[in-house]
Image (cartoon, rainbow, N blue to C red; front, side, top):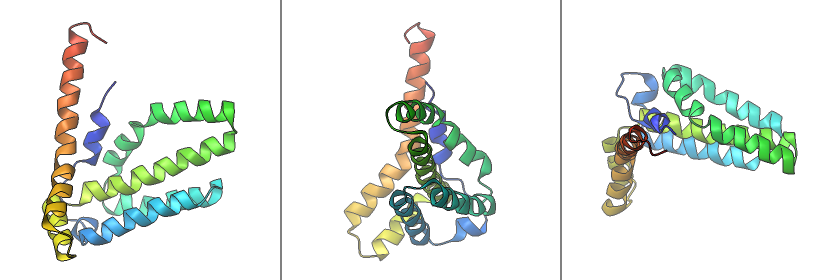
Length: 163
């Protein structure tokens, strides 16, 4: 099991249009995409929502990192397709996969383009208490670090024969 896909959510400093947008704008965008992905149940509207995320990925030059985040979920997607097809229907399974891809893509764009310091300052400027803004920023900053440590532990156990 590899946690390498979590590095696809690590902030990358670039001088691009998407990176220079206000963090609050990107947070609202990620939340709107997530909610819209949860509201629809048919495949076509979900597919259109998912496809509307592609320009953001291309504008931000995030394609390689985005592919890593989607590829990291391939086992989950395969598992969901098998179970949902067996117990419910194939169309429901595809709709669920597209929903997950929408949410992962929206927040992948958010995490890859938002500096944790800028996010904390933006949250404070929105009158969110400093403690909450700091906690959110700290959690945001340490997820990739924790993923790297977990991957190191898994690699060490695998090298010792534990699987």
